[in-house]
Length: 508
Image (cartoon, rainbow, N blue to C red; front, top):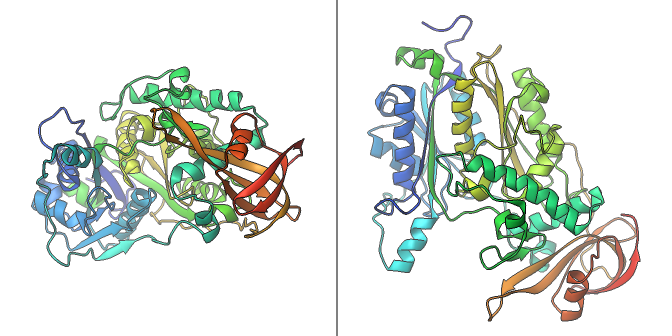
């Protein structure tokens, strides 16, 4: 019998499974095997074994990067003996995918277009590297020719502008490092004080990972270990050494079972296994980082988080359990600021897993793991609310979901709130005076094994407030940015790869 007041079409999470294969176990499982195993564990977690798995009429999969399957959900379904009417898969890149897909399948259930949905994702980057190093060809299944899902969810627009490409900002770490230093400028902190701040944040995350049986690196780390460069913690791009960045070299999978309340009841899932999706929202910031008004802020996180909370009918202070997407420290700090969360509340840590450095960063699929962890926590605390966030590209695409074991008051609807416009003009090719608003020094490993700087990228504002990106690789300019702190410095931009640092500081 349905709980009192619960509409039969209410979407409910009834099973959550995770798997980690650290390489000590036999075999080299790929993403399809890990995804299927995670769903098997979700079936066991629901108390129904494989009955709900085999009866699924909708399967949604987060696009894997370790083997670019076009329809991972169909492969996982076949492994489980399911024959879904429809499959969905996210676009090739985007860590916002788990919440976007969860909202999509929950909406389908609420509208009567599906009864039992599976959501899964997995990565096997570590296994792929092991296979390449040892010359082993892993027996990962291939898809039939022409395999495609019934729907591809999300946008696959390229992440970089021409200005950003010209400045050599080709990967996440460099963008996030620029954002991190922009935040330091706004906070008015020295390099040392800011490193202590983000090292302490990551140390608290590692403490959570140490208690997580599905974490890739379940080890507590001290602040000094995290912020001090050494051969095992090399500098990547200031202010980030390796242990302050996401770890993609993992083998992990996660899976969720989402049913209508009627289907869950008919399958005999005990009510103490039910967790309801109260709100889910997605939003997008100004697409190119260089065109954002503030490098260290996210109006879209505020919009998505606010919409999910309003749908749930709660404020952030009523949410007891939090997992903020944590590819780099800046992502957590920006989200916490946008949502009104303190960074260091011991009663309410900002991660349930340990984050992408320590729990693991399985490609686009991290948030499926945080949602699975949230399900377990909320079952243990059935009166509480929990929130998880997700993001894709460079603080670009965002999602937020609010869950609770309490039944929702109304019918579920996925939200796509409007984001206030916050665009800054850029000035490609500009020469003349400007003020440094942020910078990062990119490092490489030298011939002697030591870290050595290879280039500095600055983001500067001209007198009209337009942004310019400059990448310089000459020794004199690099030295000016490693031996001193150019934040707030007045500079003369003389070319796309040249600027002359001055000693004067000016307010940004």
